[in-house]
Amino acid sequence: MALIVQKYGGSSVVNTDRIKNVAQRVAEYRRRGDQVIVVVSAMGGVTDRLISLAHDIMPVPTEREMDMLLATGEQTTIALTAMALHALNISAISLTGAQAGIETDGMHTKAKIKNITPKQVHQILDQGHVVIVAGFQGQTREGHITTLGRGGSDLTAIAIAAAVKADLCQIYTDVDGVYTTDPRIVPHAKKLDEISYDEMLELASSGAKVMQSRSVEFAKKFRVTFEVRSSLNQNPGTIVKEETANMEHIVVRGVSLDKHQAKATLIGVPDRPGVASQIFKALNEAAVNVDMIVQNVGHGTNPTTDLSFTVERTDLPKSREVIDALATEVGFTDIVTQEEMGKLSVVGVGMKSHSGIAAKLFEVLAEEEINIDMISTSEIKLSVVVSLAQGERALKAAHDAFIGWNSSPSGSGRLRKHRNGEWSLTPKPSSLSQMPSTT
Ligand code: ADP
Ligand code: ASP
Ligand code: MG
Image (cartoon, rainbow, N blue to C red):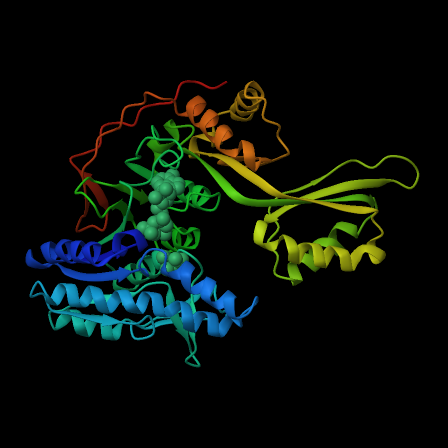
């Protein structure tokens, strides 16, 4: 008997038929004697609809009420999922995030989990029921309902798996696992058998929405191995786990495209100490998350320079307000913004020990006549900013150059946790295909 956490995303519970399908799967595990905690998202599209209802009432709704509203999406699904299990004669009890003991800070709409007290979850499991928990939501110590940021049901599942020390954590979605890139954009993308936390984190924070990036951070911190797999078939998925020595043999694990970037350029900024600090401190105080920054070299006796940075597109109006307010104090001549930018990222732990990735990416983009606007690198990631219109073409070209068309899917199996706490796939996966040298 295993203790299993299963998370079903919006598309897996998009209508009552899909909810019945979820119940069938849960019932299979239950009938073989496993204890199951099910975490569900709102039915696909519901959260977006709730947000747009709120915006019909007022352009900037208060965040507390927004959370009160959004939490209803998941609350609908937990009740329906419990009923679908009852219809199969499986006893199940649904819990809100608060009832499941998820305590968060008070940062409405992007709250952080501070503590989990899964007392009620354990009690219900021990009484022989399936527990259905509303994803994406928690409660502050003072009793206010909060939500955990878009895609936050992933975080609920990982956090509960850590809190109850689950034997298995499965994230069910509408694709067979984590692919070398979004299979909706590149149909010949290849499903990965395994990926390290760091690679998954870099991909997730660069546009691969298959996992919420904060949930991967949490999994890494609390060493929760989890599997991303499809709710529509029985295919084995992708295991996300700690890096192992053989992972470095693959130079590029995946590529991603973030389509939500925007760029601002300040022209004629005085090139003197303290200016960058003034600008980015003000943006930080306004809770604008700046991603890439590029500054040119100043020339002459009273040098001025151009300074560009990228932000999430939704943060661009706020960034403009902040920068406009600094115009006299800082003394730049103009600000130019570009709303429609994309960020292409190439990710792999093997990049730590291989050179030539940047040269190859630049060559590929040059062949496609795609202009690179900005560049940034980390130990396991290389990102370039390009115009959004060219983003998907850039992604396909980079994918085909680094991963190729023909790499055959590697072996797969079932995830198991052993008595010594280690995890393995059975049968053992065949070795992953190796990328040709890129230098
Ligand atoms: P859920 O509703 O189950 O949480 P999401 O829509 O949030 O599902 O995430 C699944 C989607 O993520 C897929 O349908 C796919 O289009 C997209 N995706 C983006 N990048 C990747 C990737 N590298 N691998 C798999 N899916 C990806
Ligand atoms: N329903 C929320 C969203 O759409 C949370 C989730 O699906 O994970 O973002
Ligand atoms: Mg999701």
